[in-house]
Image (cartoon, rainbow, N blue to C red):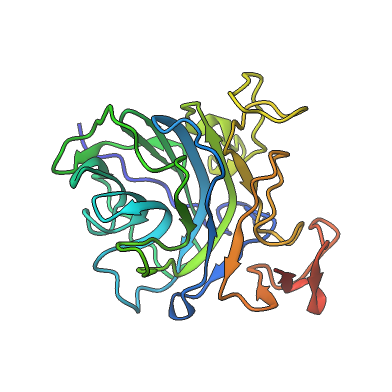
Length: 288
């Protein structure tokens, strides 16, 4: 059976309806990223990350990957979700524990850089990685230590976490993301598939985002919150809230780094269909 090539969601194939209301632009040359260090540990063996990403043109260094989500304890114990890295032009999740690399990278190659296409990436970890791209579960090639690992990783540990970058030692911030990110969900303590975060539009046969709703409680859910868990969060990155402010109800806020006082949004104009809270300059700038 051949490798499933993910379908790129483009604006024209998505009937022009902004696949996402807005998105946050990350400039690799400025090392723009967000950080958070959890105050208490969550489930370090079971969790799910979901987000829509659009890589910029492949003009800067891509050899070690463009990092989307990461956590760092020390050089021998760290985690990273990225484009590239171990597998060129792939989506790669690497769990490095006791200096051994676990996890895998997609056999499918994703090469729409700097175009109009968005990729929806879901990484579900449950002592091993399952990766979905635009709703399709991907076949994976293993890291050197294998696809699975029954030990505790650094995601959900009380160590520094990054969105849009990672660390390889105690002081650096390397291989930042270059492009757009939007609609980021993180669920602590549950392994979920892509159907929780997207659906196939029957009219266009394209994969589109949907609001995450879960009736299964997670350990650490705040009052009135269901299905996010201790370190769960939702960052829409669409101008509807300050950048880094968790919208899940869990209060797990992130700190923007190198964005300045405002940051450019992907959508050029605000219409009545898009939230305008915390935006300026006709809706093209979002407050930090």
